[in-house]
Length: 248
Image 1: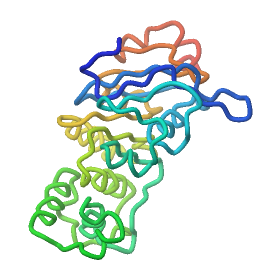
Image 2: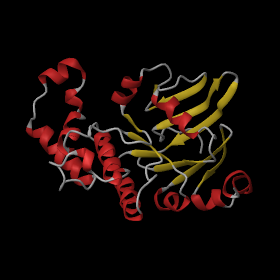
Image 3: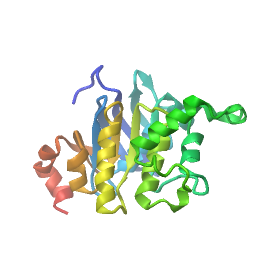
């Protein structure tokens, strides 16, 4: 896909080296609004590193990361979050001793910063936002339940809900269904499709069946580079992909 004004995120010639090893090398990636784009590839291909570069966790050594017309390279992580990019890591990062409602409430943008926390009030707008997000993630019946006793899948959904509280334009999910039951995986696919109606979602995933369920577009990485891109059907039949990934 060529660079276009229609893309919400454009990554061009992105690269990073660690002690001389190029973990990501000349990576190009274009994300359209309201789509689910899945990045696949063998272990060590550089998939998670790409997310680290986009969200500012790792500093790129070359290339551009353009989000809604703004360059992200050099921006601090918290600034990138505030600009509208949310990141969920593989392991859920929630407050286990707090309730589902309290986890969502703490994620509301009004509570940001020292003064935000001190002056934060549980307004009707905050309440409504928490209830709306809880319904989206399927936890509206668990609002008073401690997060620590949720199932693995529910904890993953709660963390996605905590991202949704901030109304991001892009959400990045790293292996969201790892360790889930079949039923939870199905619900997660439905959730990702639902939240992509008004934002873009980047997913790293190994489960090809799950990828088929959610992906509008698939990017295949190998040794830090893109080797194929397109529909799941197209990349599945690409000889290069079969050789380096699906064949293994």
